Every structure is written in structure tokens, then in C-alpha cells.
Amino acid sequence: MTNPTWDPCQYLRHAGHRARPFADLLARVPALPTPDPRIADLGCGPGNVTVQLTERWPSAHVTGYDNSPAMLDAAHADHAGPTAQGGLLDFAAADARTWTPAEPCDLIVSNATLQWVPGHADRFADWIGALKPGGTLAFQVPDNIDAPLHALMRDLAATLRWKARLAEVLRRTDSVHTPVAYLDRLARLGCATDVWQTTYCHVLQGEDAVLDWVKGTGLRPALTVLADDPEARDAFLAEYRDLLREAYPSAPYGTVMPFRRLFAVAVKEA
Image 1 (cartoon, rainbow, N blue to C red):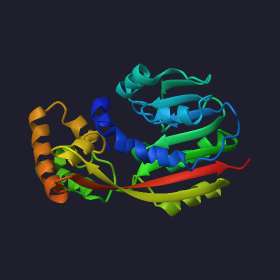
Image 2 (cartoon, rainbow, N blue to C red; image 1 turned 45 degrees about the horizontal axis):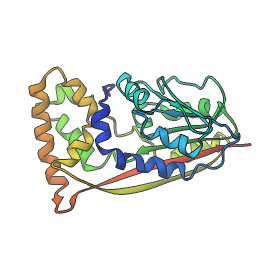
Image 3 (cartoon, helix red, strand yellow; image 1 turned 180 degrees about the vertical axis):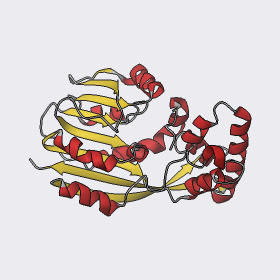
Image 4 (tube, helix red, strand yellow; image 1 turned 135 degrees about the vertical axis):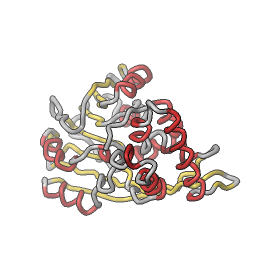
């Protein structure tokens, strides 16, 4: 899988739909161990959902971490600073493959990031070890690698025209584990664990809305590889667009895109 370059503007075009799962995740996070908690958001992107943490815990020191300079620049510009009740929201560069908190955390949270991190389940022990007693690790990941938007992308990338450049570029089908696998891993680390799935039926607006969505996320590795060849990039997008139009037909009210996500909340023993 190619490490993608990210476009905050493209990502935020569907900010409302993308933010809802994070709100649903936070709704299941219990009370934190300390009144002025230390919170880490791993894979914060442009910071638009990290702000939800400061709304839930207004006196917290929240740090959003990301490995994309473009995403961090957007987050700093739009969201960094003190909060109304004495908290602080800041951002820092970090890679989830190696990141460990420099100080104990009340909450480590990750929104739609770990699917990009090979071996992420092997990091759970380190992250839970960095939690304060009674602290929480909470994350959600897309759980739809078998959905048409991904399957068609992979099939197209494997065709004769594209496989030399794209066959090994896209996210692997094993990039997210089963719900039971996550529950077992976290429970064996001594956490009270809740794991569940939700399928959102997003109604997207605009022409080729599913393509517009995936250009902000799953398609980023292919767009990164083809960035130096605009003609090839546009040809690939045109072929993929036609496949998506058939798989996700538009209706008078918009285009329905079912999207399954997986959630986990693991609370460390107090």
C-alpha cells in the first residue's frame, strides 16, 4: 500500500457524513478518570472532528496527531488554541505505527485512521499501557473493504492497463480485522470492551457523488501514484466513475451509499 498524500479540502467536502461516526463513538465513551483530562486524537486529519473532544471535555488538553503536513496545517489554522473553560487544543506530527504518548492519557481516540496502519492491533498494548487507570482507548474504522466502491477500485487497478502501476497500491482487504478479533485482543489486555458495527446509508448530493467521496479517502493512494501523470489519472478516474455510476445509481433525492463502520471502546481497569 502506498502512503497517500492528503487533500484537506477534498476530505472536508463530506465533513458532515464523516463526522457522524465519531460522535456515535464518543457517545459510548464513559466518564474519564480525571476532571481535566489528557486526550490524544490519533489521525486527527484537518481537526474538524477533534473539536468534538473539546466540546465533550471543555477543560481537557487535547492533542491531535497526524502524519500529513497538509492536514496538520489545516488543523492548526482552523482549530488550535485555548478553549472557553481553560482547556487547550493543539496538534502535532506523529505516525501511528510508532507513536506512544509522552505522558499518561485519560483517553486515546482514533477516527477512521487505523485502517491505514498495518499491524495496528499490535500497538494496542502500548497505547493501553499509556492510559491512566480507568482510561479509555476508543476507535472507529471503515469496515466496508468488500463494498463496491473498494472492490471496483481494486478490480480496475488489477486490469492489464493499470496493474503495473496500481495493483499493489491500494489498501489491502485485510486492513481491518473482524469485530471478534478486536474484542479478543483488547479483552486479553485486561479491558472492559465494547465492539459493534453500524451501517450508515449516506445520501450524497451532486454529480458522481460517490467518486467525489472516495477521492478524499480510499482513492488517495492511486491519486498519489498518478499525480505526475494527469492524463493517466484522468483516464483511470473516468473508468472508475463509469463503474461507480452503475453500482450506485442516482435517485431524485441523491445517491445512496451504504457504508459499514466498526467501533471499539476499551476501558482499562481502574
